[in-house]
View 1 (tube, one colour):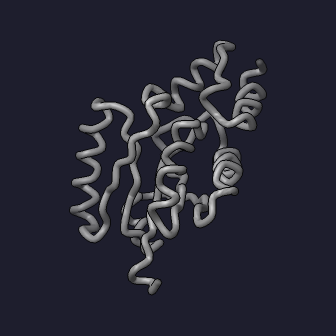
View 2: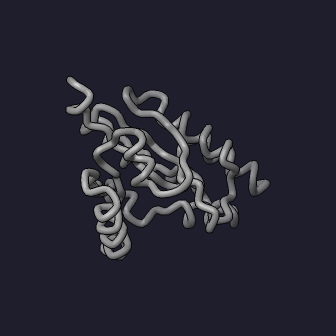
View 3: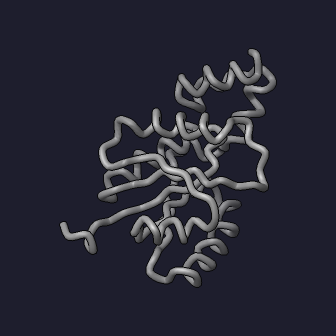
Length: 164
């Protein structure tokens, strides 16, 4: 396949931590594209539990068994990162109707910046429609059972962070 026909997608997020919902989106995206870059968005507006290095390691471990899926990080606009990587798609997960308004606005703004890059929405399995990194952290912080929400190694890291 020539480079111009290669289907490259980025899947941006803060992944603090990466959850089974994120993993589900990655599993859905992987067969649809020739290359998927799971991208850590360095967002100065957030105060993450995990460092950039810890989140990158979680992402690498999560995607290591997927051919053509890799982890990377960027700062700035996701659409500019996509352009630099020659990606033609930005993947976004939609859990519920409440996600749609923000995602729709973001997709339209991205289209204004880079009309050649489309946004593709993937819905996770219904088991994960309520799941977010914030909810997972809240459960773990209070000693709840987060086993079904994150990969086992992430659960261990969260227990370390919270001393549980």
